[in-house]
Image (cartoon, rainbow, N blue to C red; front, top):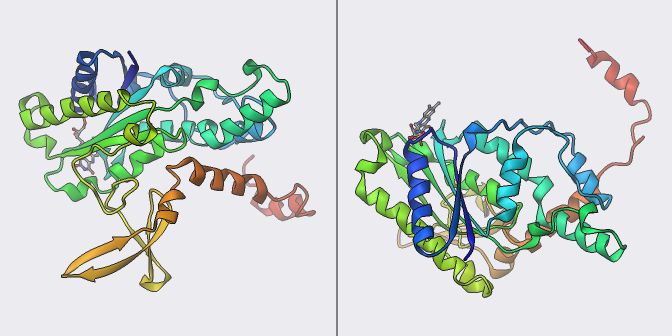
Length: 316
Ligand SMILES: Cc1cc2nc3c(=O)[nH]c(=O)nc-3n(C[C@H](O)[C@H](O)[C@H](O)COP(=O)(O)O)c2cc1C
């Protein structure tokens, strides 16, 4: 039996909440223990950008967040979970502010490439687990997310799924399923929309199926969504264009590819080597954390810094 956590960022007993709980019920039926959290009920402060977490881990410490609020409730539930199902409403084409706040609080502080190095080096140096980042960070986890939008046109949910990856990425959670529910306002409530209820249940079954293969990395992380998408790693449809159109990039994975038109259709190719360095992989995250560790300018690089800043000290 594994533990499945469901997180809703929507209103109490509204679409997201019922869909997350429906997926959790499918997991329960498959024999798993489930927990539900309505994230909007928690007091979660915005990240201030102090980087105490990152600096702490680089110095071989726990890297705990300095903010005092309810985040620890979410953190403990996430650390205990083997799988997480996230449901979020669309606000202005993107996930809600609270969703993004949680992403920021999880970002660098829970990045497994920082945590793994801090844990391994700390243990090798004789530190106790209590002095180091939470060991449970390193266990494999799977996840799934869906977005809900009131609009009838799908493009009003344009940045939802790509942005939702910001929630799972740093923790290295393998996302095995995603879907979008647009046109929610045409129904009083999702309980009156049987195809969407069925899809939510299917998400729970897909997560349970992944949990049945936790020892087999390929089968565990196998994509179970309905839509292959343009990127073979995150299965999103978003592309950015650079080098005057010579190169395309998946903005979720941060990988480069090429695009061409074949039979009137856009064909996008990401090499195996690029796919392997997606920031959804451990290698991709390590590439970034190594960059962060080596790029920081030394203190005192600008000797007359106070003097240069003086004209901008307006109302301290
Ligand atoms: C501030 C605000 C902005 C919204 N922006 C969008 C939007 O850009 N696209 C969309 O499809 N729906 C939008 N909606 C509709 C919500 O996504 C929709 O009501 C959803 O069902 C809320 O989820 P819930 O029922 O689980 O609370 C917006 C709603 C609010 C309150």
